[in-house]
Length: 142
Image 1: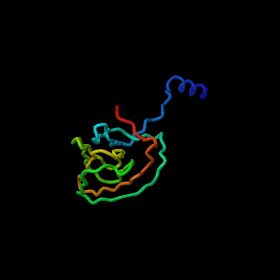
Image 2 (image 1 turned 60 degrees about the vertical axis):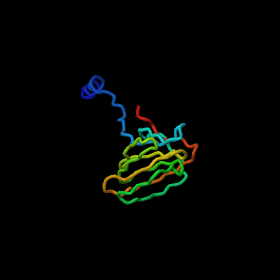
Image 3 (image 1 turned 180 degrees about the vertical axis):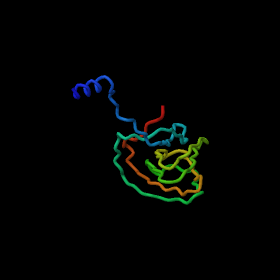
Image 4 (image 1 turned 120 degrees about the vertical axis):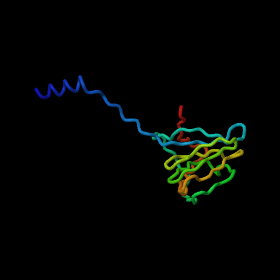
Protein backbone atom coordinates (compact mmCIF):
# COMPACT_ATOMS: atom_id res chain seq x y z
CA UNK A 1 0.00 0.00 0.00
CA UNK A 2 2.86 2.42 0.76
CA UNK A 3 4.16 2.07 -2.82
CA UNK A 4 0.73 2.97 -4.20
CA UNK A 5 0.58 6.12 -2.02
CA UNK A 6 4.09 7.16 -3.06
CA UNK A 7 3.25 6.60 -6.75
CA UNK A 8 -0.03 8.54 -6.42
CA UNK A 9 1.74 11.42 -4.64
CA UNK A 10 4.49 11.56 -7.25
CA UNK A 11 2.06 11.44 -10.17
CA UNK A 12 -0.36 14.05 -8.85
CA UNK A 13 1.68 16.44 -6.77
CA UNK A 14 5.29 16.31 -7.87
CA UNK A 15 6.26 18.49 -10.77
CA UNK A 16 9.21 17.84 -12.99
CA UNK A 17 11.86 20.30 -11.97
CA UNK A 18 13.86 21.82 -14.79
CA UNK A 19 17.57 22.20 -14.41
CA UNK A 20 18.25 25.49 -12.58
CA UNK A 21 19.36 28.42 -14.66
CA UNK A 22 22.83 29.35 -13.57
CA UNK A 23 23.89 32.93 -13.30
CA UNK A 24 26.14 33.67 -16.20
CA UNK A 25 29.31 35.70 -15.79
CA UNK A 26 28.75 39.34 -16.70
CA UNK A 27 30.81 40.49 -19.66
CA UNK A 28 31.39 43.46 -21.92
CA UNK A 29 32.64 43.22 -25.47
CA UNK A 30 34.66 46.10 -26.91
CA UNK A 31 34.72 46.25 -30.70
CA UNK A 32 35.58 48.67 -33.50
CA UNK A 33 32.57 49.90 -35.45
CA UNK A 34 32.45 50.82 -39.12
CA UNK A 35 32.97 54.44 -37.98
CA UNK A 36 36.44 53.57 -36.60
CA UNK A 37 35.36 54.18 -32.99
CA UNK A 38 35.33 51.67 -30.16
CA UNK A 39 31.89 50.58 -29.00
CA UNK A 40 30.74 48.12 -26.34
CA UNK A 41 27.85 45.79 -25.61
CA UNK A 42 26.87 44.35 -22.24
CA UNK A 43 26.07 40.68 -21.85
CA UNK A 44 27.59 37.53 -20.43
CA UNK A 45 29.79 34.57 -21.23
CA UNK A 46 28.08 31.21 -21.41
CA UNK A 47 28.87 27.75 -20.08
CA UNK A 48 28.50 26.02 -23.43
CA UNK A 49 31.45 27.21 -25.52
CA UNK A 50 35.03 26.10 -25.10
CA UNK A 51 37.63 28.46 -26.54
CA UNK A 52 41.03 27.26 -27.68
CA UNK A 53 43.56 29.54 -26.02
CA UNK A 54 46.71 30.89 -27.67
CA UNK A 55 48.32 32.16 -24.48
CA UNK A 56 47.55 33.32 -20.96
CA UNK A 57 49.26 35.85 -18.72
CA UNK A 58 48.51 37.72 -15.51
CA UNK A 59 49.03 41.34 -14.60
CA UNK A 60 48.60 43.60 -11.58
CA UNK A 61 48.23 47.38 -11.71
CA UNK A 62 48.32 49.58 -8.60
CA UNK A 63 45.19 51.33 -7.34
CA UNK A 64 44.30 54.72 -8.83
CA UNK A 65 46.17 53.95 -12.09
CA UNK A 66 44.87 54.80 -15.55
CA UNK A 67 45.78 54.04 -19.15
CA UNK A 68 45.12 56.64 -21.84
CA UNK A 69 43.81 56.02 -25.37
CA UNK A 70 44.81 52.67 -26.88
CA UNK A 71 43.46 49.74 -28.84
CA UNK A 72 43.58 46.13 -27.70
CA UNK A 73 46.93 44.59 -28.65
CA UNK A 74 45.15 41.36 -29.68
CA UNK A 75 41.73 39.77 -29.46
CA UNK A 76 41.46 38.53 -25.88
CA UNK A 77 39.42 37.92 -22.78
CA UNK A 78 40.44 40.06 -19.80
CA UNK A 79 39.19 38.40 -16.62
CA UNK A 80 39.07 40.76 -13.65
CA UNK A 81 40.19 38.92 -10.53
CA UNK A 82 40.13 42.02 -8.30
CA UNK A 83 39.42 45.70 -8.77
CA UNK A 84 36.93 48.03 -10.41
CA UNK A 85 37.60 50.32 -13.31
CA UNK A 86 35.81 52.65 -15.64
CA UNK A 87 36.26 52.18 -19.38
CA UNK A 88 35.60 55.05 -21.80
CA UNK A 89 35.18 54.62 -25.55
CA UNK A 90 36.34 57.17 -28.10
CA UNK A 91 32.74 58.46 -28.33
CA UNK A 92 32.62 59.12 -24.57
CA UNK A 93 30.43 56.12 -23.60
CA UNK A 94 31.44 54.48 -20.31
CA UNK A 95 30.95 51.27 -18.37
CA UNK A 96 32.25 49.95 -15.05
CA UNK A 97 34.08 46.60 -14.98
CA UNK A 98 33.94 44.89 -11.58
CA UNK A 99 35.68 41.99 -9.85
CA UNK A 100 34.62 38.70 -11.44
CA UNK A 101 33.54 40.22 -14.74
CA UNK A 102 35.02 39.63 -18.19
CA UNK A 103 36.07 42.16 -20.80
CA UNK A 104 36.28 40.80 -24.34
CA UNK A 105 38.66 43.13 -26.14
CA UNK A 106 38.33 42.99 -29.92
CA UNK A 107 38.89 46.67 -30.74
CA UNK A 108 42.35 46.08 -32.21
CA UNK A 109 41.99 48.95 -34.72
CA UNK A 110 40.48 52.41 -34.72
CA UNK A 111 40.38 55.12 -32.06
CA UNK A 112 40.39 52.76 -29.09
CA UNK A 113 39.42 53.18 -25.46
CA UNK A 114 40.90 54.22 -22.12
CA UNK A 115 40.44 53.09 -18.54
CA UNK A 116 40.98 54.26 -14.97
CA UNK A 117 40.86 52.35 -11.72
CA UNK A 118 38.18 53.38 -9.24
CA UNK A 119 38.19 52.53 -5.57
CA UNK A 120 41.17 51.47 -3.48
CA UNK A 121 41.96 48.03 -4.91
CA UNK A 122 44.64 47.26 -7.47
CA UNK A 123 43.53 45.64 -10.75
CA UNK A 124 44.46 41.96 -10.86
CA UNK A 125 43.58 40.30 -14.13
CA UNK A 126 44.21 37.41 -16.46
CA UNK A 127 44.65 38.01 -20.19
CA UNK A 128 43.48 35.06 -22.25
CA UNK A 129 44.37 35.50 -25.92
CA UNK A 130 42.73 33.45 -28.65
CA UNK A 131 42.98 33.29 -32.43
CA UNK A 132 41.14 35.89 -34.51
CA UNK A 133 38.90 33.24 -36.12
CA UNK A 134 38.03 31.52 -32.82
CA UNK A 135 34.34 31.81 -31.82
CA UNK A 136 33.81 34.46 -29.15
CA UNK A 137 31.96 33.38 -26.04
CA UNK A 138 29.57 36.30 -25.61
CA UNK A 139 25.79 36.53 -25.36
CA UNK A 140 24.37 40.04 -25.53
CA UNK A 141 21.64 41.08 -23.08
CA UNK A 142 18.41 41.35 -24.99
